[in-house]
Image (cartoon, rainbow, N blue to C red; front, side, top):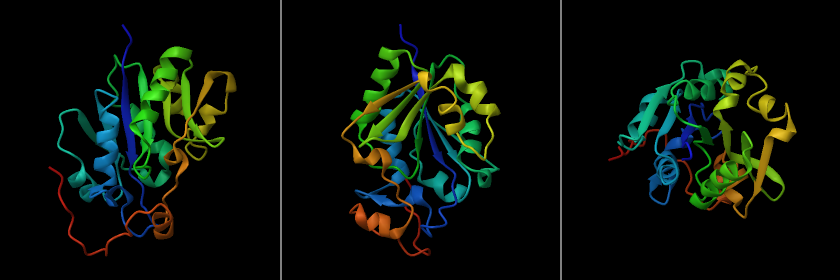
Length: 209
């Protein structure tokens, strides 16, 4: 029987260039974090969401679901890898590894998550990365065998330190999904993607149910 992968969403960033917490932005009448969580829970049995900056507002927007574990990264200013290390720390010990995704990449299709999981089981590679138009992006799978390597990697280099260490360990899955490398960092990025602009900072937060 195949061991299952768990999910990790990194949603701890400061969103400085957007001027509004990116996990709380709107896509189809829901927040980014709600939409991404629902998409990933169609593929994984358990999801870890790492929060940091804007933690109370982001926590309030996360769906109330027994399959979701929320963990705080007090050192979120040290970058994405610091959040990934926190997330890895609460992955259950019997899980095969983790599908890692970003809280500001809401347009990735559920079929993309399924495709990289299929590749992980089929190829046996410990790293599987979604790729679109020749550019690698997210989601990314890391097998449990690489967790220690990720935990000891220098945070200034990020997870790519582990990805680039040995190309033979990596499987790329080429998919027709522009969301894989669609960076939404500024209001103009949202406009180009056809998404609503950030609301005024004083807008009350809509709580998830």
